[in-house]
Structures are given as C-alpha cells and as structure tokens.
Image (tube, rainbow, N blue to C red):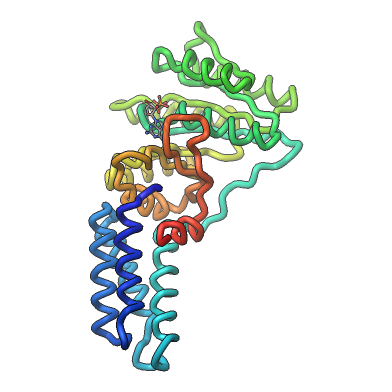
Amino acid sequence: MVLQELGDKLTGALRRLQTTTVVNDDVLNDLLQDVCRALVESDVNIKVVATLRKGIKEKVNLADAPAGLNRRKMVQRAVMEELVRLVDSGTKPYQMKKGKSNVIMFVGLQGSGKTTTIAKYANYYQRKGWKTCMVCADTFRAGAFDQLKQNATKLRVPFYGSYTEADPVRIAEEGVQQFRSEGYEVIIVDTSGRHKQEEALFEEMKEIQAAVRPDNVVYVMDATQGQAVFDQAQGFHQAATVGSVIVTKLDGHAKGGGALSAVAATGAPIIFLGSGEHFDDLDVFNPGSFISRLLG
Ligand code: GDP
C-alpha cells in the first residue's frame, strides 16, 4: 500500500482518540501533534502542515460542543476533511469524451516515468474500450521512440513517430492529425523531458501545445523527488497549463507525502498514481477514497 507508514501513524493517532474517556483541548492538541509530526516525517511541506492544523482547529470548537461521542466524531471528521484537502486541488479533472478525439499531451522531466506512464495510461483506456493510440514527439532522447514503440507493440496500440524527422512539433502535428482523421478517441502525445535545458524544454512544450491543441496536458511527476517537486510542478504548470497530474513511483521507498500535497497545491488535480513498473501498476486517484484507504 502506498504511504503505508504515514497511514499507520495517522491511524494510530486517531485510534488513541477512541480510547480516551473525555475529548478535551489537551487530547485534541496531542492528536494534532501526532498527526502533524506524521505528515512532516512523510515529507509534507511544513507550511502546508501548519495550514492543516489551523483548519482542524477552526472546525473543532470543543467549548460549544456537547460531551461524548459527538465530540470524538467532530474531531475525526475535521481531521479527515483536512487530510482530503491536502491532496485535493479543488479542480475537476478533464473528462474523456466518447466518440471524439481526445488529445492528451504528456509532459515531465526525463526519468520521471513518463514513457512508462503513457503505456499504463494507454492500457487503462484501451481496456475500457476506448480507441487508443500514441505519438512519440520526443526526438531529444535517443531511444525514446523505440521505448514507446516497444510498449505500444506489447499493448497492441497503434503508434506514430519517426527515426529521421528531428522536429518534434512536426511529428506531433502530423501524428495527431493522422489519428484524428482515423477517429481515434484517446490520442496520447509523448514529449521530450530533457534535463538542464529547461528554457528550451518549456519552449518546445509550448510549441507542441500550440500545434496539437491538446484537450488535456498531463504532468508526470516522480514521488521520490520529495518536496523539490513543488517548484518543478509550478514551472511546468506555468509553461504548459498543466491540466492533471500523475504521481509515479509511490511504491518502494518514496515518502510520497511531499509530492502528493505539493502537487495538489499547484491547482491541477492528481488523476492517477503509479505504483510499479508494470502496465497494470496505475491506480485511479480520488482524494476522498485515497485518504479513507490511507486511514485503513
Ligand atoms: P521517462 O524518462 O520519464 O520517460 O521515464 P521512464 O518511463 O523511462 O521511467 C524511468 C524509470 O522509472 C524506468 O526504470 C521505469 O521502469 C521506472 N518507473 C516508472 N514508473 C514507475 C513506478 O510507478 N514505480 C517504479 N518503481 N518505477 C517506475
């Protein structure tokens, strides 16, 4: 389970609330301390944690509350709601439209898991019966087209790309045009994720975006990057108007809390979590059910 350690700590803190005979300010403060410590330890930004703490305090007014079970419920509900808010951007993700060409452009830094995630995403929609295809507009990284092609072949998803054309904008435009005319419903466009030349990368992203007019731009972000992701996510968001986010590598050792909370704060909703290297390792993300599951 993703973020097992954080889940265990939060559950432990809420369980202690069950065993106290009275719920007073001391009990609430102890609980808040445990919850906040657990979040900080799992890499959530300290300012974000402070906002959560304030939010819970504002929701829980013990002085006016009747004694007994209701107080406990009130505290639990406030903690739950504020945890959901932590991973909820407050915006509705793009809804894929049946019978129409939905062009979905993927962006993200090299190594973030973008190409793998594209395969998972294609697999997800294809299995649900959507006519799905891929376009490789990453002409920067040697081997990018081969990797996409291999995945597409395994998934039996049509693909478009070129070994000779060096202009990613042209490939993206031609590929999307071809698949649009063939009535494909989910047209996934992979873009370059080069490091260290961010200016050039962002410029290219803008050009591809202008050429293919995507219905949604999906930003792929690596959870193992911890709190650094906040600036990265904002940079991409400004350059390409990111519509949704997929957080990868939440299996393994990622603390994950930093990524999840930082991304939500950029205003783009998280739509999936990547939890492994296989095509099936992609989980639909919903803030409410994610927090419910986290709390067991
Ligand atoms: P790209 O450069 O962004 O296209 O990244 P790739 O898709 O090539 O992925 C980089 C590495 O991360 C590969 O070894 C992938 O197998 C791995 N990877 C991608 N997503 C996940 C994930 O959710 N979990 C794990 N453990 N590894 C992942």
